[in-house]
Length: 333
Image (cartoon, rainbow, N blue to C red; front, top):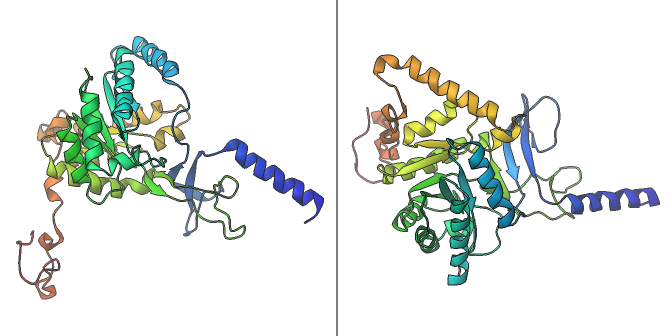
């Protein structure tokens, strides 16, 4: 390695250290199968990859800004997302400090982050969302001081999300939002043999979001809305237009949330919101003959259509019973 190559290598390393973790996007070649985070022509974005950790702004920076936002738009709903540790009474008190601060700032609801994939601590982020006990006690701590509705954002990285959902409802949650991003790693470059995103050659799991997680997120949501058909849910994952939002509504969600599409919107969100509301208006107009005038008229319409494999109709010759030795359910259709 000559002197210039050493200087270039040092510069690249320094640039990575300075820049640190960040959000990037996964793309697939048009007409091909290559997946890469490299920005290139003739490729289509299929996912975002979030590796930015949590806000480095202190509470006293955020609170007045929340107040300013609410003062500017008093007739709009403002939701604050908060996160703290859950491993001790002292840590649980931090949830309460955050809750009291943001509700005093004027927010209309609070979302508890039990889903951040970037935490090493066993009592923070997604690690809380994998533990029903921590889900319940953390929610209880917040509800003890909350004067506004409390939502819980659960991680999809759990064996049975219904267990964590039940724990949060038992803890007093007013609603659940899902799914946050899925834990994932960036691809490895076949030429350099380095992860496409790294700091000094090292990487840790980030969160995969955007179009690629729509189907997985719908599956997680269906589990919960079927288990708790009378509770409130907010759908997240792969939403950029009304068609995707509609899928969550038909499973029983009352609201949806957008992140990746908003990041890609040059106006940082308004264009996406406009498309969603316009899409909703058009959908209701097309279904006016059914008497539909609002979300309540079709919400949850397809929740009951998600069934065990044994209930899916198959040719009689297949003699399929979902893995059982004898019939356990009548097939649909």
